[in-house]
Amino acid sequence: MADENPRYMTTREVARYLRLNEKKVYALVAKGKLPAARVSGKWLFPQALIDRWVAEHTVYPSGGLMTGLLEDLLILQGSDDWLLGQVVERYQQIRHSAVPMASVGSVAGLEALAAGQAHLAGLHVNPREQGLPRMEQGSYLVHLFARQQGLLFATGRGDKLDDLKKLSGQKLRIAQRQEASGTHRLWTRLLAEAEVDSKDFVMVGPFASHLELALAIRSGQADLGLGIRVAAERAGLDFAPLHTESFDLAVPANFVSHPRVARFLEFVLEEIRSSSETPGYDKTNCGKLVVLGSEQSAS
Image (cartoon, rainbow, N blue to C red; front, side, top):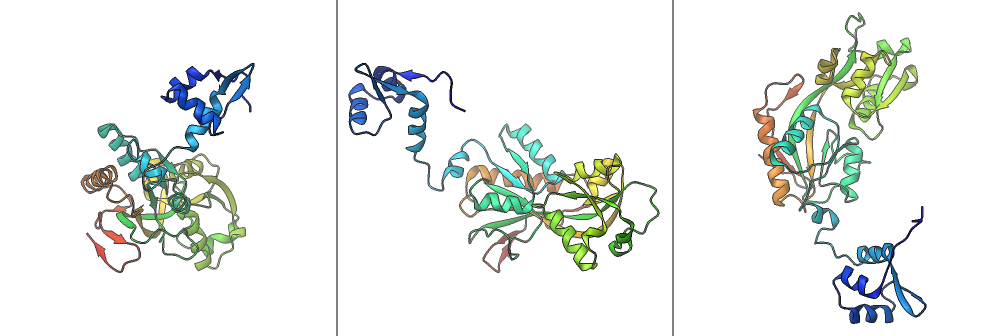
């Protein structure tokens, strides 16, 4: 929508605005490089177009816009996880350093890294899998913990809930995560392994986080859902484990050595290692590094 009251600056005002002398402004206008309009013998400069001109001529540091942003904040996208969320919140409170965090799913996190829209991605899928966005050679996977995923359900159910095939004929309402999440991929894989068609269930959602999914079951919107154990604990649900998975942070090669990234990773690993035991988490290999494109790993 166009600005109903656009602002126009005089030559003197635009010179002051751009920190230039007036002769330089006239020279840029004469060469057709600066947006301007001549009205009654005077040059007028629409501020919106001047701002756009500055943006188009901005030179970003090596590594692009995301490298430049690292001076002020660190952007984390990817999989939803309760423990990681707690650690990030604590980091921001203690270090007074912004870490915008978007729980968009593992696949979407990898896509954000590939598109230059994030500095790190939380994931519980293997980025080497076919069909997933590829990370650049020399990027790192930093292992945080292993966690349990399984079926969440209201207490008191008498069903045997470790066999999806036995549940498939009951037209149960299944709370699901978004398609770009690793949990959605896991659900699809578990159904395929059990030779069960998703049409045998009534799908509800999608839900953006494990806790939202758990609360949907708690409120009666769904009968079951695949999620992490801690979400079941928080929502007062029962839990039937089906899968244990690695949860990692993916870090592009060009961000690994940046001081802000290094400080953040050091804090996260120390917090996870020293945190109290949380249901469904195994921190045994916390901090293990894997270099993508290399057979070697380091600790």
